[in-house]
Length: 265
View (cartoon, rainbow, N blue to C red):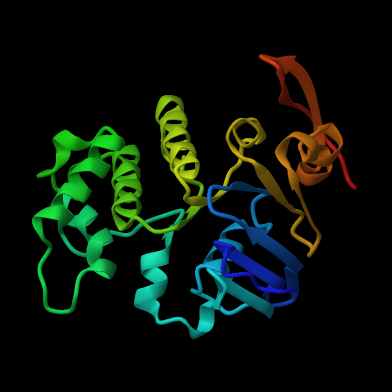
């Protein structure tokens, strides 16, 4: 595969494995600026490990990853952090901190060594907190937050980082339905402004609503990639989740409903 510098993120022959098992085999993917890709699959199918591999946090079993046409493994980590942000599924608060200082960590790739955050950095952080409805929490200790509030702080941190590519591992984790929609709408707006979004999701209906394309991971090396409107259907989702998935028309799009019958494919 020829690597174009116009591609925001690409991988060729990418293989993701754990001991004794290949989760993803020979994935070739090219993402442009402004694309929203949803990654779907059962628990343990490799969604998180694939995102961590695309972020350069673990080596692929085989294959290459490029950001803006340059090999990820040969790019300085500070440069990678300016171009690409990972929202992990879970975040650990190792040291006591308040909300604003935690969000300001997202600016560190853009700050020279031994320099403090500037007023502009603080404005980035405050704007990000406002986007996730947390602007009144700036002085709150992280230990006093609920799980959903802490998740929104983590989202504000990657927004403050302001990369070209967002890798989001279950961004709606711990969030109530309204905030799940708010967050996905937020990142959809980011994609419409030219950012590239890759998000692992559990809800095919949200993927249909927000993503341009979907990557289905079957957990045994197999994968399917295609436009959301074509690849998300009863047959593909029933196979993906090993259960009968039915669809009904809803507001000009299909609504996928688990029928509850487990199927062995």
